[in-house]
Image (cartoon, rainbow, N blue to C red; front, side, top):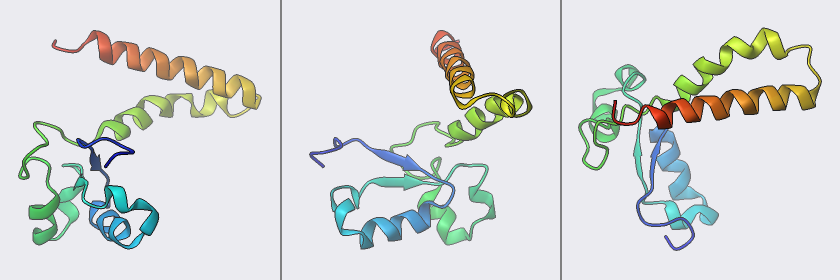
Length: 113
């Protein structure tokens, strides 16, 4: 995987479908063997065989990853929906950028606590 590195992992709600797409899409051939998992809160709705293949806590290389990071970001940003609805595009982007910068700083500051 010269373009992306060799230690890539993808966690996606429909990781099993993503695996099929990666295998069939020629332009993504360099990452077709990347490790894929489904977040632990979404995996419970999947078939047992899918759970065995894509659960991050069962498969090696994922550590204590739960795969729900993006869900947390969306949850944080949901409070900005009504506030930014009537803003101009520029002000909306600025507000969300500041909010995401703050979110990232909070996460960085709390590493190890």
